[in-house]
Each structure stands twice: as C-alpha cells, then as structure tokens.
Image (tube, rainbow, N blue to C red):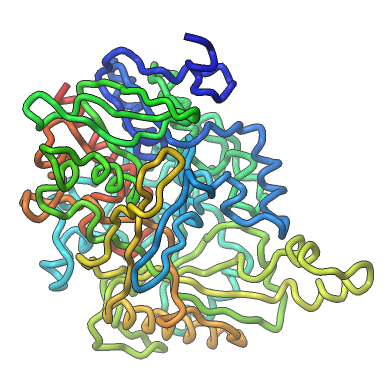
Length: 552
C-alpha cells in the first residue's frame, strides 16, 4: 500500500488505515469523545478515535483570530465549515442555521465556544415531576455530582462558588473567578435597587496558569477563537488521550455502524477518507460522541435488514426531541463609557429566576404564567469592537476617528438563555434528496417553538428591560419571542430513560438494544434546562467512560 493510500489521499503522511480490533472505538473528537478516550486509554485499553474533520494546528490560532475580525470572513470560515461535507437541510417551521453552530475537527465545537460552564439545577433532573412538562431524567443531581466535580477539575474551571441559587457542591472551583468587567459593574447598583441578586460566571478558561496552559491574556475574541489556548478546548484533552496511548484519526468520516453476533452488537465502524476509500474499524465496544445532530444521523444511516428504522431505534425516538436553548436579549446605549469588548466573555449573571421564573422582587413585577427556567447574563461585549467598526466602513483619517468616537464605547446589553420545551415533532432526520461528499444523505433539522417557550422569552425580556432601564440605558433593540434564535446547543435526539419504548439509552449511557454501543453527548439529555450544556456533557462523558471500563 502506498503512502497516499494509507493517508487517504491527504498527503500529510498520517496513516488513516484501521487498527487491528481494539477495545474501544470512539466516534467524535469533541469534548465528550476526548474525555472518554483519555480515561479509557489511561485505564490501559486500546482506543481509536475517528474524527470526521481535520486536526487544526495550534500555531495557526493567532492567524485565525486575525481572520475572524475581518468583514470578509464569517464565523464558519474561521474553522473551515461549509461545502458538501457539511451540507444540511432545515425543513421545519423555523430555519436552523446548523453550520453556524458547529466545528468539525479535533476539538469540535469547543474550538469556538464561549466557555461558560455551570451545573444543571436539581430541578432539571425532575422536570416532569416538579413542573408537569418534559421528562424526568433516569439519574438525579446526586448521581452526577461527583462527575461534575471531576469535570470542573479536568476543564480548569474558574469560579467564585458564590452563586446562592446553584445546587450544592463539594468543593470550591479549581481556579479563582475572573473579576467583574467594568460594564458589569455598571449594572450592580441597579440590580441592588431592584432586588436582583448577581454572582460570578464559572468559565472554562484559566484565570491563572493551569494544566500546562497560560492564564487568559485578554484577546477578547473567545468566539470564534482563543489564540492563547487559555480557554479549554477538547484538542487539549485529545493530546492527553494520545499521551496515554489512544490513536486519533482525523478526516475519517464514519458513515455507518455494522452489526453482527446476533445483531445486538456493533462489530465495526465504516469510515471514509478524503479520497473516498472505505475502511472498517473493529472494536469490542463503541462510543458515539458526535453531538446532537451527527449522532442520530449516524444511527439512522446505520439501518439494515435487522434494523430497518436505524440502529438502536426500536423506540422510533432516534432524532426526535431535538432541543435548543433560546436567546433573549436587549441592549442600547448608556450616557457614559462602558468599555465594551474589553472582555470577550461573561463575568456576571443571575440565576435568581431559574427555578422560579415568575418570581417578583421589590422592583420587578411577578408573573403567574406557566414559564420555563431563565438564566440572565450581562453582556460586556455588546456593540461593535473598534477593529470591527474600522474594517467595516470606508472612512479614513478624521472621518474614521469621528465614527469610532460616535459608535464605540457606550453600548451595553443583557442576554439570557431560556429552556425549550422538548417536543417530539422537533427532530433530526435524513434528507435523501441531498448528499454529502461521501454520498450519504445529509441531516435535516426540523425545529419549531411552543407557546411556553415564547411566554418565557417574553418574561426574560421583561426582566432585562427592568434592569436596563433602572441602569439608565436607552434600550435600542430587543431579541424576544418573534425574533429569537438558537444558542447552538444541540440536545435531546437520543434521550436517556428507563423505558426502552420511550428512550434510546439507559442511565449508564448504553443503548437499550445494542449491548456494546454507548452515547456520550448532549443528545442523551431528556430536557435541556437553561444552562450551557458543556459541563454536563463532560460529566456524562466521564460517567460513560466509567461504565464502559466496567464492561470491558
């Protein structure tokens, strides 16, 4: 076999041919796949990770940052998204901009995430019991609590452990919190007058040197790229997995899983390299960690005479209950400097309206509407950056200076996440009318909103307007029920549960009907809460690794 055949025609000399049958094959090199691979490799198991996208050179991050601030590039361009490889359809009630929400490559979407990491509340695991909608998880907060602590240490979470509304924790955050931004401090007196309690935001970025990575140096371009590497991303964890002996194969797009041995066991993952050649990686156990869209897509692509509706899909729920977080926001200008964009991430938030979104305060009216959890955020990066303003216009010299003085430095805003009610009709399916670069049907995201979610968005706007107006902000824009968009958190498409007819995986993250197939992904979330999901993804991945290790 020639070198070009071994590397799949890439020409980089990397061997992309299969390993001999290994203990574990992990599909996906994002946060879940990276953590699973590291733990299993450290336990002495032979692990192969197959990743559809490329391996990005960390030395190119500064160049990517510079590219990201130029008007000629959009967010997807920075990490090479687009084209036939990443084609998708969106035929639901609302258009879903999938490629704005993901990165295919070693590190996955953590290459461009914001890095906010908080635990779900105890109520999130008992949503149906407590609130009468959605579903209960088959595990509770205490089951995941030790894994949350482990995940915070692995990611290097900076936080003050000062959130009075958060669930109980066993130890402080590993790193000290970042201080509030200047613009966040402008909100503080208004919140105090209104009776709104604020607290720090836990961030997966180094406030001081940690785990071989430097402290944050303040580029402010956290989305879509951290040039310094101070923000945790899964490529750091992949390096740990490789140090422990795992093999990571990039540009290896898995197109289907094949079964045998009574049809309740996966025997191989069939993947294609860039030259179109197909290979088959065999393993004793398989872990899907490809996210909330590609995981159900792969299971549906793996249909066979023995599994005519797709693999692990006897319930018919693979791809169903696609769930997102909805963005609510409002902002405008303050008649004083706000130092916007001096910090590229959130430092202050409020969970006061999470478990009781209709609660009032001394300065905020209550609501008796049927509402979902709300998380409020103070956006110190509202408004254009001076570089963005300069590059997006045609002015020069004094004209440009005048425009910068007029448009920069007085913007301020609030944002928030709202839980979406899980709906069976929201789903990921296959679109046979359109194929990717290897001839496989692309995912079709069918997405819509319900009345409770829209009511909750309106309530979030009401809270935001009250705080902004008390701060003295001239509110110029609002993103609410009619204009909302996704937070790009894909959840729910292979939901977890105890009943095989009403779920896809069990409490140990193993699919009900395929004995050696596990799923480590936000796709297993029965409900999404209103918290950014990555810390819960990481905790579940560590839990999944423990169960796979026990089964080997």
